[in-house]
Image 1 (cartoon, rainbow, N blue to C red):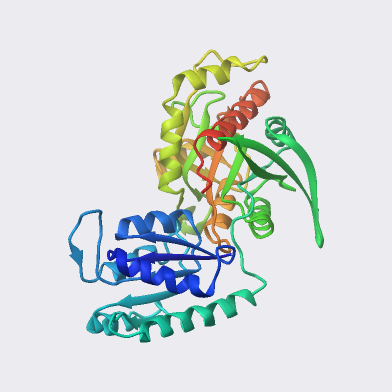
Image 2 (cartoon, rainbow, N blue to C red):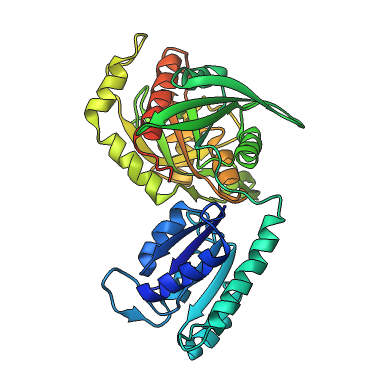
Length: 407
């Protein structure tokens, strides 16, 4: 189905455009949404992959606002290249002002067709129909056209982590794909009476590269709306306690950079390339972290060894690296030399975020939810591994069933 968004403050013009499209395409062929101001259009573009965007150039930015001459251009500039948006495949500028149409036409790389809307003639109708017909012809011949398919993809580094996610879902089954030797697992859950699909897989090895490889395959094969990594991590003492769920607000590779010699001493000069989660996801994390009764019920539901501290959700920066750390001096060097507010240190999240950020379209939103099982020091043990894996999986299910948006 072709997805069309019409953005215009003139309701009569919107009706004219919609009627013109429906002359050639039925409801089973095309889905049409409309917006009358720029911010409403941004909201729709944020949650949908739009094939054809038809917009006026002169728009109000907010409901009831005054017209802004170049609001359409500003809208396109804001969404182009932004991680939370998928840029429309085909953009048509349809303006009643010839000078604006000409000015818009020179905006390099943002529009494909500029048309003059003139109610005194049917010329605009013919040109609009021809433009849409030509694009649809190309689109329907493109076998690689993609839209969201699965609702969530879950990545785990360890089998015990994956087992707990599986246990929280229904209708578990293996999924095999031709020419792909990974075994993927499908499960379902319900949100507001609608069945949602989850695809899961365990990375072949620990580390950023295996995690990025698996993330890429999951996105390419299953086109999920959300990518989630669950499991266990090392926390930072004073920032989190055993079992607390760390939500990685942003991450970086703490080993990236350059090794140099200064005063006959080896010195590492780090390159901090941060990848942040979507602001909508961050808001969801803040809401669930404030639900003390929910967190208490999650802790109470675990029957094994658990700490005396209350369960918390800690959102903050998480460092990824190539090695398991059991040395507090390394942790201190990351905090003091890179990012002071670091809340966790682990081996995969940067790979998951990088692959998600630079994936094929439609791009997923992403979040890592890893619970603290140690503090990257010599006291590492397995006392709280099971509890940490459990709290991570439970928080994922809460977000997926109550907070994630799928439409």
